Structures are given as structure tokens and as C-alpha cells.
Amino acid sequence: MADEAALPEPSIALDDRKPGSMAIDPETHTIYVVTRRGVGGDSTIDVVDPARGDVAATIPSVTNASAVAIAPDRHELYVANYALRTVSVVDTRTRAVTATIPVGKEPWAVRADPSAPTLYVMTGDEFTVIDADRRVVTSNFRIDNEFPEISRGFAVIAGRLYVPIPIAGEHDWVGGKVAVVDIATGGVITEITVGRSPDLVLDPAGPTIYVVNRYDETISVIDPATGTVTGPYPVDFEGGGDSAIDPARQTLYITNFSSDTVSEIDLESMELVRTHRVGDAPRSPVVDPATHHVYTSDSHSHSISVIEPAEAPH
Image: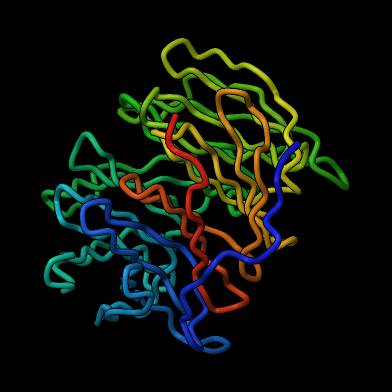
């Protein structure tokens, strides 16, 4: 039976700032979080020092941020600016914007390829590929996805893009699939059937893709090497939202927006082992691979919750 925390996890206060997307630098343990001040205010990037438990700085010249990604080896932070239809490049050592790249449409999500100087930007049902060295767009391609705002998680593995796509009926979600896209051509290679309202997260140690079927409260597992899927495995994670993985601990964390909790799932047994109480409306979890601390962006309580590991890694 899963444990449930009696008290909320500790948190880092952000005062009047409402947090959104987050990224963590595994070398400096610094958190970069999109924050918005007030209703309809501009969003920017706050730099959070978890050791001190406060905001260390705010990155200037970034005022329309919607999502962030980091490339620690390049010392660069990438910021998707929704209203401006651009991606900003920030030097994490100086916290200065070094480039601004137009992407044509409003960007919702951004990923940095850990094995190449390449960025992948989700702009609705389209994807933009950026050469991070030259700071230019190299290609665009469209994926048939009627509800791109529902599932913004995607993964890049060996020249292929894995995109979760929900399937809607007249009144409800009726299914889901993961489109496997050849990045070089932009063509869909295959589609893998999963559960309803899927989102996904990549375990780079495999690599393995875990699909969180939020409407079914199940998890499907995709082996990118073979294209096979196992599951779905039933896990009671209270609806589910965004996800993050601690590869060393083989643990999956799923934020539950409506219940203000985080579900901790053991990936070896595929069982829920603990439910953590966090701030209001948690999303965008990130894991520090060195300390194994998990941080969630609690948008309604204007804070970042801190989950400490209860046990040693597997």
C-alpha cells in the first residue's frame, strides 16, 4: 500500500510570482522557472537557488516566456517566448540573452537534444528544428494533432521524435497514440496505440519512454529500439498532469493538479509507493540527478515545493 505524506512538503516562496515551466541545471543545482506577476502580467525567468531557498536573480530582457529547456554542457538556457514567436538563448554563466531566434508561430514547449546542438520547438501542431550553433531554423514539419495543448511532452531519440496525441470523441477522450516522426523528413514512421489523454516522459538511461495515460490512470511503456509497447499498467495517480523521472532511482513522479499532490511510482514494480502533498496546482516537475530532490511548480500557491527522497537509489 502506498504511503501518503501527513504534512505538505517544504517549499520555496516566490512572493507574488506565479510559476510555470521549470528546468534545472544538474551541475549548479540551479532552477530556472517561468513566472508571471499578476493577472495578465508579463512572464519572465526567475533564477532559484534551492540551497538558499530563494530567488537569486531575474533574467533581464525576457518578458514573454512560456517554457524553458537547458543544455548544461553548453551553459545555455532556451526560453520559448509565446507572444513574441521567438526562442531566446541565455548564457547561464552571465544570465544574459545572447541570441533571439524567430520561429514563426507561438512556441509552447522547447527541448534541447542532449546528443547534438539542436533544439526542438513545439508550435501548436507543428515542430520547428533549430541549429543551436548557428542560431537558425533548419526545418519545420506538421503533425496531425487536433489538441496539441493537451499533451506538450515529447521526446527525441536517435533522429526520431515521439509525440503523444489524444483522441477525442463527441463528449470525452476515447483513445490516444504516440506518433513516431523521422526528424530528417518530418514524416510519420508509425503510430503506437496507448491510453486516453496521453503524455510522455523519457528515461534516458534506457532509453525508455513512459506514457502517462492520464484519463485511464495507467502507464504504457515504449521501447524505442524495437517500437514495442507494454502495458498499460494500472496505477492510481489521481488523474495526473506533468511527469519527471529520476533515472538512478528508477522513479517516476507525476503531478496531480487538482488534488495538489505528487505521485511517486517505482518503475521496477510499476506501483505507486508514495503520495506527496505539495502546493496548490502543481505542474512541471524537475529532478536534480545528484541530490535526487524533486521540485514542482505550484502555480496557485506561488511557490516551488521540494520533495526529498525517502530511500537510497536502486
